[in-house]
Length: 168
Image 1: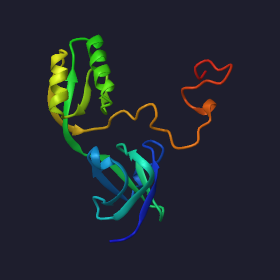
Image 2 (image 1 turned 90 degrees about the vertical axis):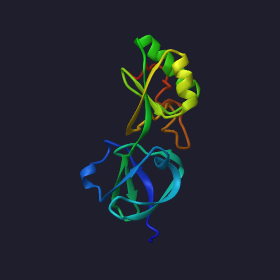
Image 3 (image 1 turned 90 degrees about the horizontal axis):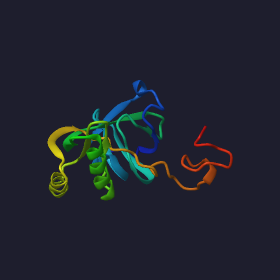
């Protein structure tokens, strides 16, 4: 057991995953942490030590203090695929899921959520079709997922400085 720390998260796509030293495969709960001791798939022991609780996403990298990088992979887990008869109906279902602050993975034709009997019953009552599946869960990051401390309003992605027209 070592005291090797990972304090930096490299966003998926912002680094070359071919340079990963090891890989760690975690379910949603295992990827939503601030501080935790992990053993990567190849046996590397390290401590995740972030400033705040963070949801690690599939293909993110964890930079260890010695410079090596551990690739994060989303493990398959029990999910529910939610579908509807129309786009309008699916949008309404998405609203109900979001209104309950549930993590959700969105696509054009379905919504993936973690398996929860109470939520499934609610969705069925709203006319949804549901199918239990096993798949990696990579929910949307959310509008505030990037928030990490000091902010300048004009640099916020949803605030426009005078004269800006929606980021153009």
